[in-house]
Image 1 (cartoon, rainbow, N blue to C red):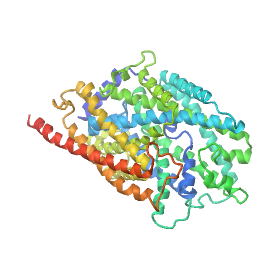
Image 2: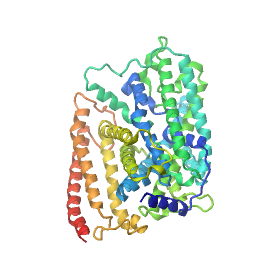
Image 3: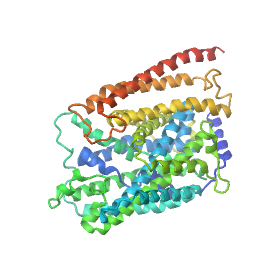
Image 4: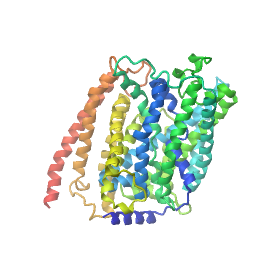
Length: 567
């Protein structure tokens, strides 16, 4: 079976018309760096929320319980199954067509949504600097023209192929790493005090306080250490796809250094007795233009010109991320379409450059539309989808270790099956906890995003045919449901899991966010809801709906699937 799967992968890679490129380990390291990090921007929000000491500890611990495990798993699976579509194909082989679609859809749609954020951030950093020198500047048309130009430029680069994407990413990444190295050097040479003090934003008065402070930072920390799998989606376009797992292992410690060292140095530099804490203390850190951040360190100690330099660095970092995620995200829908689980137009490949140009253009069109609006409603879906797809990849790593012969692996995580299970189960537990402590708006939005997976599969599998079109014998269809045999049971199981998570959220979130816990500020945007109570009520309604769908699909499976077995 493993040999057949391997042959199928090779045939797909050769038949889809994508052009092969030679990329060095050096280039792929910077591409993975951009997909995961491209600088430490975003960490600033962790510091006032959790406290400087706890934020630093989380930056040191999360790599070992979240970032490194996934980097290792992505390296192992990428070494044995280096195919276009990456993580989607891994889950498909391990758990079947239905779960493969869920992983592919959840992660791809999250990239489509999230990619817009980098365009908006680039515009925000650039025009935030302009407003520093001209407080009256307010020209939405100019800002939109900049965002549209950014999207167009990187669309053209991506339409030329992965090699050109890598060349641009190399230049941008070196610039960004050099800038954050400067922050670390300046901060450490102006060390003023202990960066771990205070440890939490406010003194701990009860054991439950730890939950609130960890919850204020964990989603950002997990987000900052996510993305190691993204490069796997373009593996079919590399002459030597084994360069991806090699580069991933190199990138893990590089990203840790880029996050931890500048953050520690900046906090230490502003902890000195001569520094105005009301202006530069840890509570002033954040991503807003007027907040304290990484740019403030060289600006404060070396001069205001470095504020301009770092605004340019910030724009370059967002451009680097955006550039590489167009490549990664577009291949997700390409792989789904190739398996007849998405519109076939997504599989069209340019004959000259060998690029899935329709998929690339689709990413940019979505980004152009979303950058015109306040898309917080969409952003709250993102983290939940990302983490859910990761859980499926972790499970797949364990399943495939049992299925695939040892000699096919070019890299295997040392320590045997027991250690593999440990580094998969621990982050799965972290992921489940994160579902509950990110807040009700993220919980509700994420649940809606997850539900979109089985709903879309129900229609696209019936309409496009799925893997049955490729191999009817290996992927039989239930004549009544027009879906794969066993799919109704799988849909029922997914809704059962959502029901259990919803029940947990219905009890935990009111306690967590209610009286005595973390309460939304009066001016906090709850998106679609007038109050916190309305949001909790909506979560309960959605939980009941998931329970009903679970029962309905369970009885359908009992009726339909049993007849399939009898036949």
